[in-house]
Image 1 (cartoon, rainbow, N blue to C red):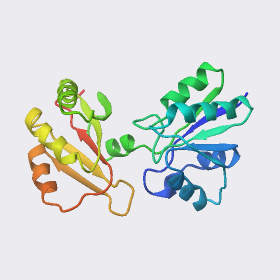
Image 2 (cartoon, rainbow, N blue to C red):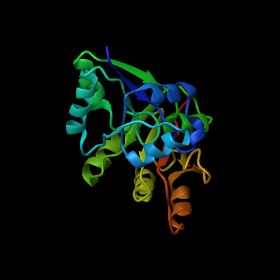
Image 3 (cartoon, rainbow, N blue to C red):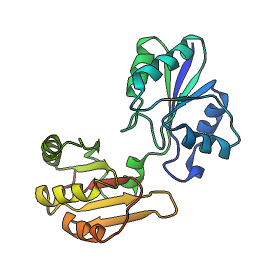
Image 4 (cartoon, rainbow, N blue to C red):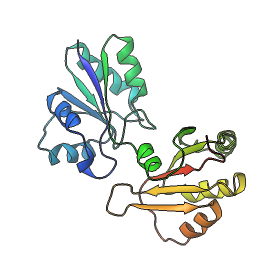
Length: 226
């Protein structure tokens, strides 16, 4: 039976890939990836050459059919994202469900995750954590979604883009002004940075920066210990 491997890849530092992930990437017949350029950089670092299939949020249905055809031909495929674990706020769920429905074996190959990296550096209780991922982009839905999640008293992990991080801090300043935050930026990369404090403090700090790069991971600290 052909297999679809869901392979976690580094979120920044290319040394963070596991030996098992490298073995799988070397053995499969093709690699499905978000950005072929980024995956090619990773594969080249470890002298691996594989056919790449573009699979991202804008072509999921068409690309999924292409990948499913490969599986039906008896070929094994590795699914990777631009960084971290596929399916955690990255494309992948649609393909994994379809592969299961058609009887293919889905094999997780765990490893790096921005969620796990941020929580490990936070020093907060690891129980009672809610992974929420990216917020909806539209204002009305976004505010309602955020308010509903903030009703949870445990820790909440959010992902945000550089051009919306200040907007998120403004919203948190209004909806949860006293909840402490830990922000991870460029984690595992050369300019890795962690910022801690209440929303107003972090908003003031980040507002003064001319340019912000990299995805942001935000931990809203628990209101109470679990």
